Each structure stands twice: as structure tokens, then as C-alpha cells.
Image (tube, rainbow, N blue to C red):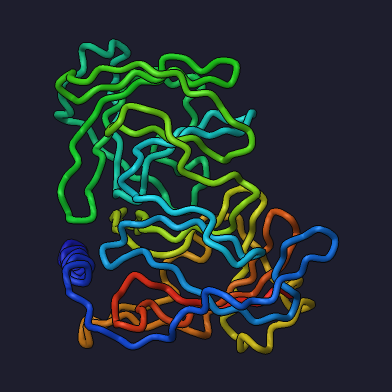
Length: 338
């Protein structure tokens, strides 16, 4: 019976993924005309001013979009295929991250001789956990991890497999990561040194260009990244690509309020809620996909209270997942600085 239920669950997930969503009218995002508070040299949204905006991930969710609530602005946009690995810039941490936007996974070998690894036979792959908690990451702390690992890079927006690479952190010293990587067959062998940049959460590396990239904006410049990412369902663990909002890992925290109407939430009420640093606390489930109707609908009663790195407090909820032409991957939302 247990295996029957598992098969049904997996079938449901992949059926939902493969369905072609139907157009659904949505409000047009307001990209301008928002009041700005310039007192004290700040460039912040005025307290109490209701702001409506939206971002365009595209229908195949190719874009990662970094958004700042305080200035009501898109700080940066990149393709989720631009990078493969990300290295923590915190001077006290040596964490290595997969690109969960590609559904990437990793398998560790028992080998420390890079040249001896040319197959992943018998290895088990694990996926990045959506919460971002260090104990649940696929790779995690590489301070003393010298084993060669193999990365299944995942898939591009068209569903094409990006292939497998092997990699090894040969040394972590004085804020530098020493990386060796190549294709699984040994082609494109490269060694690189990546240096931490404390003004950022992470620096990235691409197997396409074999170079370091700066994907994330400065850690004080954004609050939310709209992106596809991997959600690992538990018992049993099933990785599944979802589309939603991941919060900034630097001094940003979020609380949920699903019982009160958006307009009824006050600052005093918000300050009494429980706040989480989990990256996926906003996540993807502010919307629902209907297999019967073949459309996404948004739960407008799912409200999120967001404390940014500067101590500002915002309430936010989503309005739709389609643009005015019925194209999916265009979440619109409204928020207010309390």
C-alpha cells in the first residue's frame, strides 16, 4: 500500500509539471509612480503607502530576479543557467551551494585523487534543501572536505540535461576556495581560486565559462529572489522543481499571517508574530495549481511580514501568477511598509 501511494504521489507531481497552464487575466503591475521617502538621506517607500508591483520570470521560469522592497525596485536579473556553484562569503563559514534553480544534485565519492574519478556508478545523489539550513545542504561545509564529488548539473528551461561534472575543493585558506573541476570524462580540466567578498552573501562559479561570476547583488541591496528552486518533499524524500520567492539570507526574516485580512495587519500585530530565517519561508505555496482547470490561482489571504536587513518591516501578499496577457511566471504582489 505504501508503494502504491508513493507511485500515485509521484504521478501527480509530474503530471502537474507537464500540464500546459491556461491563460488567466491578471492585474497589470504598477512599475512606477510610487511615493518615495527621501528624509534622512534614505530612498525608502513611505510608511503606509500601498505599493503594487510584479516581476517577469518568463513562462519557462528562466529568470532569477532580485527585488528590494525598500526601494520598490528590481536590483538585478540573471538567467538561472548562468551558474552552477556558489561559495559562501561569510568569513566564519566555508559553505558550498548547488544551483537549486536547475534541480542540480551531488554525489560524493570516497576518492581524493581527482584523476581516478571518471564514473558515478553506484553513487547516490542528494539535492539542495529549500530551507538553506547548513545541516541540510547537499554539500555544505567544505572546510575539511577533500573528497571528489560529482555534480549532476540538472536541466535547462527546455528540459535538456546539462550533464555531469566532477569537482574537488583542494584547500580552503585565508578566505580563498581552491577548486578543481572538469567534465566527468576529464575534459575541460580547470583549477580556480575564488576569494570571499564580504559585501556579498555568495560568489558563484559557472561550468559553462569556467569562471567566477557575481550573481547575487550585494547582501544589503535586496530582500527577495524570485526563482525556480528545488523543494525536497520528505518521507520519502522526493525532489521537485517549484517556482516562488526565496528570501535574502543576510539578516532577513519572515513571518506568516494567514488568518487576518491583509488590510487588518498592523505593525503591533506583526511584531508579535514568529519570524523565520528559512530561505523558503515565503516559498512557492502562496499559489495552487489546479489539474482540473489547468491554471494557477493565488491565495490572497496568505500574508507575509518581512523584516529586512535594515530593520524595516513590510507586509506583503500576492495577487496573481499571470500577466495581463495570461502568460504564467509573472507574479504580481502588493506590499506596505509598516
